[in-house]
Image: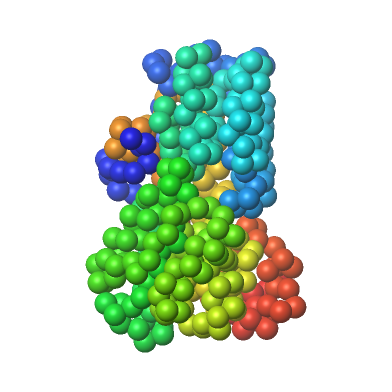
Length: 360
């Protein structure tokens, strides 16, 4: 069983919870880490694998930059590569990195590929950080509070239903989830379902999940047809999936449908401003990357890391706080630098930007 599905917390906290203690040997050592002032050699090299560029634009636009800046700023060598949605390429990259030498590996899983890499790294005494997505064999998991992400998405759907004057207990709601091979997908689902089921909602349709706009669009279109064209709300696990849903809603002239999301990507922010998407869960990538960098630096320095949360299998879990963003908060995402004003406020969206106070 993947460690992704169930979560236990030693102490529930939405804040980043990383406490670094002085050098203490043991399994977190990383096998030959250097001190902070010496980044020479394998022990001073951080190896990072990103999953793709399709499931979200964040990986190349934000994570790469923040991770590289943080690790290099601390004096360490950094090798960041992207598997581009190919499990074989993921394995090849890992083998190359391990051959060249790594003091720590920071992996974003793609369809389970990180598990085999973690096994190889562990055999060489190299600590492994699961970044954003959990997988078996990692020493630490750094991500957002993913159950809370789901809860915020569930609340988004309820907020949208309330705005439309629809009783949740009578609502027709479709679930469009994420790829089940992504360990976070179950947490998003369970968090959302916790909130929605408490309000009396059971999904009227729930096709197989995927992190893919075209697949989500097709799945939702088929679900909508099976429901006779009736839908009041959609739990969409991220903004990319929501965009596929919204394409179908627009084609069928269905306005006022509650739609959730996640990532605060450009299309998601535009859909929120234009009223097609109720809200998104904003996950400040800089905060997540900073937490991961802090853990990686500790391991590269031979220090131990203590946390206040863990996955069911005992993997230490460093949580970062997600934020719900509706039309009034879009300006905050732009102000934080996680979206560009010119990208969001295109001519067709400009009036909405002005209405909700979005400025350069």
